[in-house]
Length: 359
Image (cartoon, rainbow, N blue to C red; front, side, top):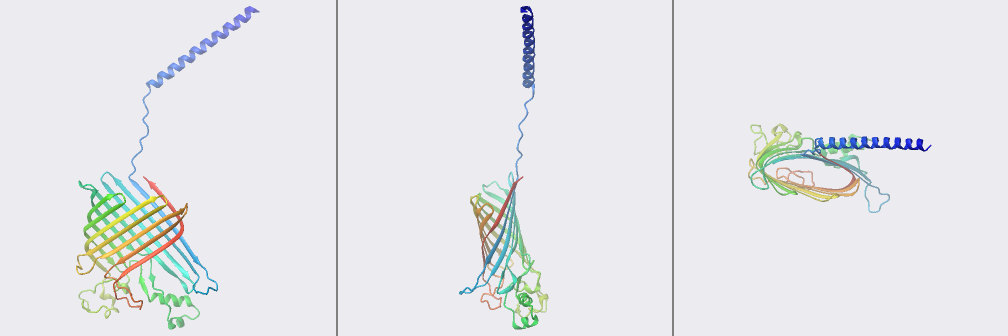
């Protein structure tokens, strides 16, 4: 029995010795293979030249009054805007593009029609290439501005207009509005291009000076050409020095567009306080060489964006325009015949969503 036990023990020891030897050899071979293998390079992240941001807002407002002693009207308002920016930067070159779309309106119980309150299409494109001078670049720009559709001054219909549409009060209001058309698609439209230099002393500020800038002011609707400073056509039966009001009924006497050649200065500033609060402003001035005695056209846009929650934000925007060639109704008497400052302000609260992407 002792001999059998001894034989079994010897067999186990022999088997373990062989297994251990094979294991050691396998480990040694694996180590040798790893040492001989080539180093695998770590993946290299490719540079990202494009930076795209899309900001959207939908804002809703409502008021309801019942037996309110101080008076007033029930109202519903809805407005939206889109702010798309896509910028390119590589080596010494930059190319910045921005598209702003605004549209909105309201319904008030005192006027049984939809009244437009905001309407704008604004496209900007700016190219720059660094010069040997620090913070200074050669630049070229393009911008385009118009609106989506017709905008009116909503006056109360006359008795004749009410009588012409018995039982259809909204039709009378729409007819009265058509008699007070203020703007429309490509009426006016501003298209400008220019060459100059771009100064960017800080990431949040840029100043573009273009001593050579030109473009056209387009007014496709003939009834609005006099309001937006279209010139009388030379060689027409009306002389250039004749009162435009006399020629008002013959719109063939006016050009559909006004060419411009001049200089433009545009300053942009943008502060991002944190992920929830930002402020941007743009001030531009254009001097027309073709009308040297006329003051420059000035525009000033401001926007404050305050994100109050994940999907809700408060937005304050203002737009100021001074165009000495545009005739305004400064006395609210229905006669647009004076120059002045145009100003628009919106304070809105609503749903917001942002998409950002680098590629």
